[in-house]
Length: 390
Ligand code: BGC
Image (tube, rainbow, N blue to C red; front, side, top):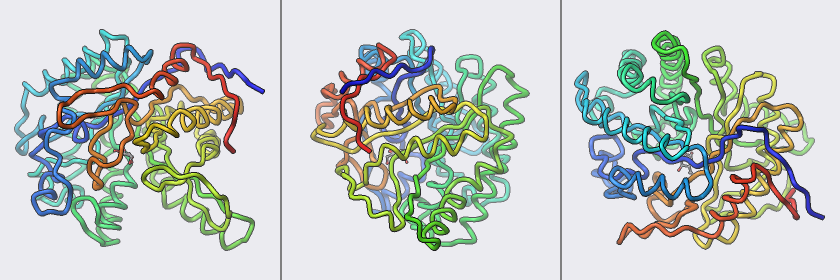
């Protein structure tokens, strides 16, 4: 039996990227420092999107999309402490305008994981001055570009940043130190709350959010497992969300994986060995309902080099997004991660999340079949689905 699910009018359909993962030549940041030490794969030319963004946005437009999330590379705007580069501001102005000319609503992330080298060397967000320093950069950008875009994300995935940077030590600054982790978390909360107030004073018309990476913690009925799931949920994101909720115009939800506590579900996996659990996105959206804020799915995607699972992945997740909308969650958009294959963080270029396949030798972009399936959904603002994966 097939079903057709309509999405709300003016729903945003698109994809996301981040500066250091696609632009190329982002050499003045902590990830480049990490690569010099052999702790991270070298980024190099990436997708060369710094120069090829027009081509990328042509593709997004041709795929029926009406929104796009990208990030500004802080180290380009403020290459040295307190010294701002106006040419780079103009570069990003062109990027935003290129999106709008193509009917793609820009969602601009101010900070997506990479820190300028000078800030990294002074301790990054461990430094007590960091909220002021980060706020100064954000204000500089918004004073110049605030009229160009409506939707702004201050921080991408704060808990992933602290978890990987200060817990597992896989991201810069490669630490395993719970005290530093807590300090950084607290400075990020302070940063966001300061920035929100200051940016709203600069421009009342903008909408500001944070993109939270949320795991769906599922447990069986065993009270210990239930408790483990609740604690993970709280420390995973809810604590951070509760401390910033008054300074959010919208909530960004990045959803990739569940984590099971004794639930015993046998789930399919992606190339990266991540479990696929589409219903998780509905569980998380329902959990956000009580905050009564608009929600954008700012990321959801799969590493699937063969493009064998991507179409089903997208459709199944969207089925569950539609269920959450039916239950009253104010979801306003869905941005698949990612438009292009790109530098997949500490794992480098092996894993491929793109609707568009990258040939890193020739820089050719090749649209995958799943992108055309997604196009149908974007263009009709509805989802036809035959088989739901529960
Ligand atoms: C990040 C992206 C990343 C994606 C897939 C998210 O945590 O925001 O930068 O590429 O997950 O791992």
